[in-house]
Amino acid sequence: MPNDKAFGNVIYSYSRAEAIADGVLVDVTEQAKATGFKLPTVVTDNLYHHYIEPPAGLAGEGQSVTGRLHDLLTLALFAAKRAVNSDRVYFKVAFLMTPGHTETVEVIAHIGPGDSAEPVLTIMLPEDD
Image (cartoon, rainbow, N blue to C red):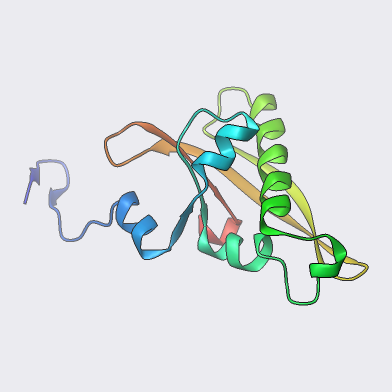
């Protein structure tokens, strides 16, 4: 185990790659690239399963994972383009939860270091931060 003089021995580590393999983070890099992002991109499982996956009963309402993810990524891109000197942006997304009822949630897009210190993007709910 590496020893860092400032912090001591590493007791436990959990890499981004492990989190993706475990399903804690959902890799949406290909969809993000199609939207205009250039970085590896994930969303948290909480955001994915509660909002990107359409609730039961919305299939006839034109709701799909692809469409909801596209909406999220498009709004994240608009928010990121407005950001100045910040590693994170906050924005709101309205998701149809039942026919005729939307829920607006605050979302965070954060650029930080990946497993090899490369820039990566994580999109999450505030409670996932």
